[in-house]
Structures are given as C-alpha cells and as structure tokens.
Image (cartoon, rainbow, N blue to C red; front, top):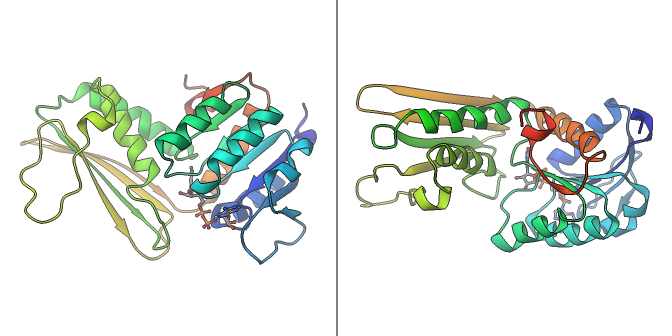
Amino acid sequence: MTRDTLRIAVTGVTGRMGKNLVLSVREAGYALVGGTSRAESPIADVRIVGDLSELISDVDAVIDFTHVSTVVRHAEIVSEARVAWVLGTTGLSAADQAAVEVASERTAVVQAANFSPGVTLVERLARQMGAALPAETYDVEIVEMHHRQKVDAPSGTALSIGAAVAAGRGFMLDAVREPAREGHCGARSTGGIGFAALRGGQIVGEHTALFTSAREQIGLTHRAFDRRVFSDGAVMAAAWAAKQAAGLYSMEHVLGLI
Ligand code: NAD
C-alpha cells in the first residue's frame, strides 16, 4: 500500500480531536474519505455521515476519537468489515472493553489512552520505575490536569500510567488503586497508587507520576501543548494497523518498542 492509497474515516470528526485529525491525515498525504459527527456544524470539504457503516466499505482504517457510547457499535462495524481501527476514545466500561477485544479477533485494533510518542515512553519508564522502586518505600500518586470540558476522571492516560506502575510491581491496577480522597478518609495504604484530577481552562493534557519516599521524590512529567501530538500519532498508528493481522495492539507496537 502506498501513502496515497490509504483511505481513512474519522469518527467524531467535528470534535477537538477530530479537527486535528483532519489536518494530520491530509498532511500525511492520505485520503480522508469522511467522518461521523453529532454536531450540526460542518467542516469544509469533509463528507459527514450519520453512522460509520455508511463509510466502512470505502476505507482501510477508521480513526475513532468520539464518545464512549459509540464504542460497541463501532466495534461491530469494523470487525464485520475487517477494517483497521485506531481507538482513542477513553472512559470505556468493562463491557465496552470486551467488545474491543472481540473485534480485535477479526481485525487489527490499536488502542491507546494517549497516542503521543512521549506518553508512550512515559508509560514504559513508569513500568520500569514501578519495578525498581519498592512499593513498601515509594508511594505513587498520579496527578493530571485537563481542559474544563473533559468529562471523565481520572484521565485514561493517568490510568494507563498507573497500570504501568502496577504492572512493574506485578499487580493489576484495580488491586492497588487508592480510593478517591474526600473528607476524613484515613491514611494512604502502603503500595496503593493514588490519582488526583484537576480541571481548568484549555489545558490539552498534563500528567505527573510522583514516586515519594521518606527521603526523596522522583517526578515523571509529560505536558502536551498541542492536540496534533495525539492526532499525528493516531495517523501513524492507522498506517501501521492497515498492514497488520488481526490483534489488539498499543502505541508501543506502532513505535517498534515491543
Ligand atoms: P469532543 O467532544 O470535542 O468531540 C467528540 C466528537 O464526537 C464530536 O465530533 C461529536 O459530534 C462526536 N460524537 C459524540 N457523540 C457521538 C455519537 N453518539 N455519535 C457520533 N458522533 C458523536 O471530544 P474530544 O476532546 O475530541 O475527545 C474525544 C474522545 O477522545 C474522548 O473520549 C477523549 O477522552 C479522547 N481523547 C483521547 C486522546 C488519546 O490520545 N487517546 C487524546 C484526546 C482525547
């Protein structure tokens, strides 16, 4: 497949991410076949349809930054058509995630809570730090800040970084996640991984993993300045996924790290 022939649909094409994806797809030289949207306002030169099924027979890859309510439907459509699916939507329930995994048995799916190369490396480093810095000595807290419109908390990226630390320590995140703190909530647990979500203004996305012992603190910080870092990464993932066998992949696969 050459650069010119890759045909892409963008779901949620009128959204904050969707608009950046239009720019990223076109700058990469790929064909933007169209997109879906719930919004009234059109985007110049983009074909907008009501449902992904109207575009699926004309595309090689779907890039999906939409709303969690669309995940199960989109999973059915991409798996039926065996079209590569780059899924960036966050806030999935266990049932949504199960639908993604079923789809990945029939087609290539790249799923990431964050498509920036920098965050992909932060997650890898977080896993190494989790393995190297003992849970009995180093308390881990993940602090994130996003724009005031964000609807889910903690962010999908914060949860991924927490899951990476937990994996480094040999646990699933759910087994060591600290409950949200409010009021007289008691002391933190040893080995727990805590989260704090801040919201305000138009911040694109900031994440810090803090490893704090009685004697030192190490902070691992990523700041996204521009959504293009996510949309360029998602387009790279689409080009990669269109050539892969069925399976569930991450940005670490796309970047050749695993
Ligand atoms: P947004 O609200 O600006 O845009 C959402 C888009 O989806 C709009 O075009 C809207 O019309 C469309 N939409 C919503 N519900 C729909 C429905 N039921 N059917 C069809 N279209 C529908 O949101 P955003 O900031 O662009 O974020 C979208 C998603 O991507 C969120 O889940 C967000 O957390 C996630 N996100 C992921 C990354 C990443 O790198 N993985 C980065 C940024 C945002």
